[in-house]
Length: 268
Image (cartoon, rainbow, N blue to C red; front, side):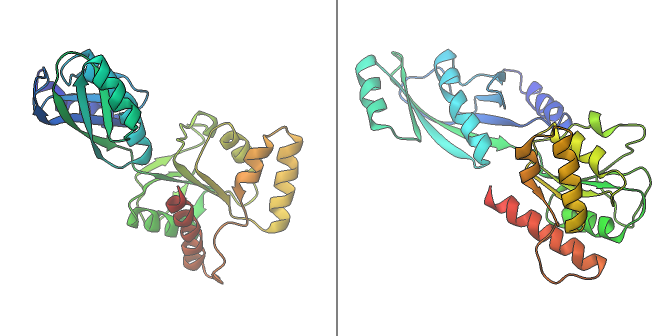
């Protein structure tokens, strides 16, 4: 393997905001082609896009475990037994989640460390343009808890600096690349509610909330349902947005919204 190629591949994946797992052989006992330090990079779909752990047997066996690790976000070490048919069947019967038993004649045991690389959870704030202290507060709070913050706004006026600003005039929301782990806050103040919500409804996101009164939210939901928007999506909308902490001023409202975001974030 070309060691120089490894950091280049990692860099490209990060630039593309793709999630992946790095599998590294950390210990070997007995006979094994793979040696400590052997690495491979596994994509979120389970494709091996770089390296090897020592051949097709350990490479293919580790893929499903890598996908599980990426889902949980927690690194773990898996023990891979390279055994004959009889020992493989005995080992599989034990059903140990931290072990894999592979039918081969090598006879060795490999400890493989699986390290997930997940993109930062993203807070997507969709604004109406102009000065909005709630939007400003959300940007600051989102970044303070380690989230990547994207503001979709035709004319944002903020003191806080988001990671990315998207102009929906030049880049329509229908073309925006929403992620499954996005937290979306809609601050369109009624003028573009329906257009924005319909665009989001075509994607799967972790959280969506809208800043509006109960009356306006009911009107929006009725109109969206009449337009054929999926009912499950409509049920998932948080509105009025935020946890009730008695918030009055914009900074308090932003705090109540982020409190709800954190509560959803930590439940998953």
